[in-house]
Every structure is written in C-alpha cells, then in structure tokens.
View 1 (cartoon, rainbow, N blue to C red):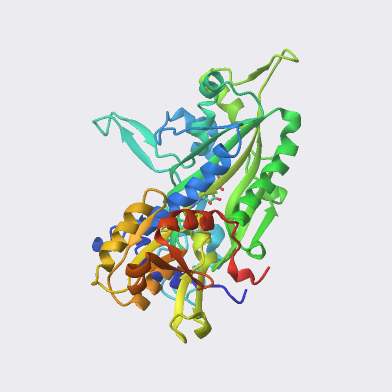
View 2: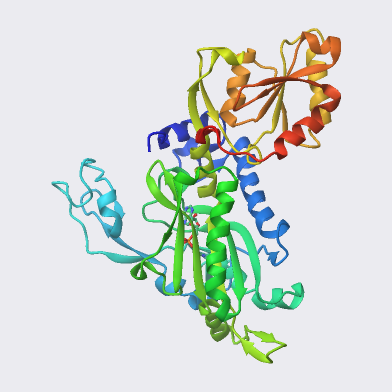
Length: 460
Ligand code: GAP
C-alpha cells in the first residue's frame, strides 16, 4: 500500500498535461462529466485498441458491433432496466442534497464533513426511495407527444438485440462472441472519484454465446483471460485481484459473477465484471420481441438458447487504473548522466499504451538542428505517434515527456550534424544510446515491441 498515489495528484497531472479536464469548466463544471484532452484521447484510444486487439486480432471467434445509443424502449423492459435498474436514494431536508442510501457510511455530510449524512446535528433524511439510473429523453419533434426513449445504461443490450443478425451474417456458431465499445449513461446519485464513476462513460463489453453445458468452463476461461490482459499491459499483479461475488450480491440475471478489482487510491474497487448471465437476456428479448433467439445445432438437430459469459469493462476506469499504476515520483540518479539530484514525476506506462511513443528534441534552436529534427519526425510519424518539441531547456522538455509517459526521447545535438547519429534516452532506465538516423525507425520499433514489465516491480 506504501506506493499508493493520491487521486489529487492524478487529477493535477491530468489537468497540467492536458489528459483530462472537468467538463464545461468555464461554466463551473457539470457534475461528474469529463473531457479528454489531446494526450487523454491518445491514451484512452490505446487502451481501447488493446482491448480490440485481444478480442478481435488475437482470436477468430469474436466479431465487432457498434449499436445505437438510443434503442427501442421495449429493450429496457425486456432487460429489466426499467423496473429494476435503481439505486436506493435519500434526500436531506436540511441541505437539499441527495445520497445513495446504501453508501451513507462512505459519504460526507456537506455541512459537517467529519460525519456521514444523517449523523450531523441538523440532518433530516427522508425514507429511502428507488431511483432509476437511466437518462430519459424524447424522440420526435414534439416533447408532449413524442415517445420516451433512454440513453443506454450499458452497451450489452445492443449486442443481445442483434444476436440474430450477427448469427445470420457472421457465419459463427457457439462458442462465439460479439464485442462492442461505446458510451453508456447512468444518472448516478453519487458519482465521483474523478473518472472512476461518472454519468457518461465508455464501456468495453463482450457477450460470449456458448452451449449451456459449456458455460462454467467459459466463465473460468474469461476470468483468467481478462486478468492476464491487465497484467500484460503492465498493471502490477499485487495491485490486482479477482473477487467472486457472494450469492446475495449477484444480479437477478447472473448465476456467477467475479469482479476484477484494482487497488485504486480509494481502495480496492471494481475495474471489470465477468458474469455468467445464463440464457436470461436472449430469453427475455425473445419473449418481448416475438423473435426466436436460438441456435440450431446441426449435429444434435436440437434448438437451444445459448448461455452468455460477459466480460464487461470500463474504458475510463481502465485508463485511470493504468494511469495510477504508472504514476511515479523519483529522484533522478546522477550516475545516469541526466540532470542529477532532480525530482521527476514520470508515467511508467506500457509503451503500447503511452500516448506518444517518441519525442524528437533539438538541443538548441539553431545550427540546423531543428531542421534535422523535423526531418526525423517526418520519417517516424508514419510508424508511431511522434512529437516535435523545441520549447524550453532540454531538462524541462525531458520532464514534460516523462509526465506524459513518452518511452523514448531522441535528441539532435552538435554531433548529429557531423555523423548523422542521435541520442535516444529511455524513460524508465534513463539509459542513453547513440543511434544512426537511418536506423532509428527500425531500432525504436523493435524496442517498442519488446515485452515490458513495470519497473516499479523491481529487477526481475
Ligand atoms: N453489462 C454489464 C454491466 O454494465 P457493470 O458492472 O454495471 O456491468 C461494467 O459495468 C463496467 O463498466 C464496470 O466494471 C466499470 O468499469 C464500468 N462502469 C460502470 N459504471 C460506471 C460509471 N458510472 N462510471 C465509469 N465506469 C463505469
């Protein structure tokens, strides 16, 4: 627990380096919504690309889908969200604030922050009421006569309602999966902790359809595969755990669920859920739509409703976990040849997740160095996300690249003009190598492709 970074430091870095900003900031912000800046977009996109890679590129039993955010309202009747996607809520008659009744002990009374809501001297809480978390809007030009529709609270239902389409057109048969990344919306009563819990967020969900008797073994498979994904991308295994739900925690549709939990600055919290959803969703949608949602097994000549194993992850929450895990503050070692005795903040991100792979820095802004640096950028940018940076002292530029997690800094100096070589500085070890410009692209690509483990784990 000793190396846990505070959420305040993460928020400050995200703002300082343009990863994530509070949304509508000039108007005072809008409760728990966030905007991603340049590096945040590149970083989160890399997280999503890695998820697609694991789902699509590295297997041939999963296909992609991008379903609409607005779906027929019957979808949410069938899924159970209209009736049951609720949190218990209480209002305080004194301060007018609303709280989740089941989280009161983790919350602060706005008037007496040392106490939970309800325990302050003037608190007056109402009885708990169920509050539906779906955002409602109206479809059609006239609000009064239009139909009420909902912003989807999960991407999963878009997959179930397309089961028949995909089965017909993808030439897949169980076991097979449908994967989707997209925005979901939940009117959370008490969002917070930065992008951990927001009202608008991105999910990465995959529904894996299997023969009923194979469901338990696929549930085990996906729990393991999802843990391995996080570890391969650099999360320290001792900050990651799998927690099986107790029977009284299970959702109405699930016979087994496990959470991948990460040790966030707020403590162990859910990063992803893996659920055995049985045949609940396809059966419900078949009943509400009147369509048959089954598979005909040619061998046994039997129809059956496939069971579903669902790994459901959050793109924003995963991005936050990678950020927290990578964050480090350290004193730079003088023997490294870099500026000694200096403090640096650095994101030790897996190179595949780093928003920028290489920064090219002319040592001075004269003697033709910027021109050579630009030439190098032009040669590299088709192969990897490359940045040119000539502003400020070289030390300051290194610090900037460390804070956004850039694995390599290429410095163009006096020697470059003589022998067409550059210095390549590696982010984690601070080691420096002299590389010929003509070989730079291949050398960097090879280094980026090497297996990587978090240097925070120490020598392996
Ligand atoms: N289809 C199942 C489902 O949606 P969930 O556990 O409610 O399951 C899956 O959500 C993942 O989506 C969570 O593990 C989390 O990573 C992310 N998520 C859920 N609510 C979120 C919120 N309000 N803000 C950010 N991420 C959220």
